[in-house]
Length: 401
Image (cartoon, rainbow, N blue to C red; front, side):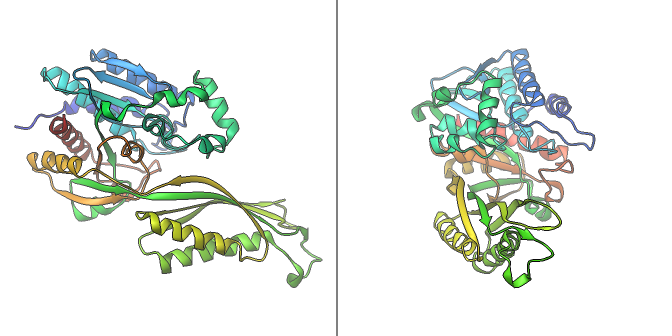
């Protein structure tokens, strides 16, 4: 019989973690380095020590539980930070399941040829940077990203200072690729496919790449009552027209890709003043890096064709990432041994596995998301599916060890 995790212990941990940063509507809020995030990370280390595991915190603030064995390390993990007013399962399920895998191996007295490490990566969600901890482990944290981080330079500096981390030493978190036996991540799907098709486990074939930009449209402010329509250089109209045109361009020309304008603000923002400036946040995603290049060129050309001046600030540049075939096979075999159905599918969301894939054979398994809802207090995965995912994670880890 395939080895199993302790489902009751796993659930107790998940519920305890869900209470940290809990919101009134059933979600959680644990932005990077917030009080709730730090409490969750301390809880994780306490649970690891209680299980007889070693604990570590690296130069990027990644928190780890370690079951020492061989010279090479098989990483299992995800993240404990959340988006504002987020769900209980995103990231957290992967961390508690990774911890439970280590405890199950430890309790069973299994002698493995590799060290197992359950890791909670810093700032996956991007309160400050996005994938900060995993990029640091991979040795791929670009200086330009730290110079102009997603959450703003002041927030990054203050956040690192709050937890005693030094920006100049973030690179010290890098792992030698030769020291890594691989990386496995359990995650909720955050989409509707598995639930809709009645499939137990998703085997992730690759992770989309994305590009993000801040755009500033600059026209001319003026009196909203005395400036004729034909005489206006309305930055708000230009930005709004771009939003609609960008959607139409991607829908028509890039099937399977997505584009999002996640925020927009007009200045000066008064009823009776024509907007002189409009700021917006643009992001687009694809599984094909060449397609991302083409989308970038067309979308930025489109922004420049709206009749006002446009300034473009690059914010994020993540390439599409295929995941390791051997790890996919290990996940498939572990699921089959448990009698669980599987389906190959890509991930439309970014994950820490995206960074780790550059330095270690990496893979992900998904469990169904009810209604495909995520980044919301309504995020939910049936507990049976959570346990199935943890057991497949255990089986795949043993196969790769």
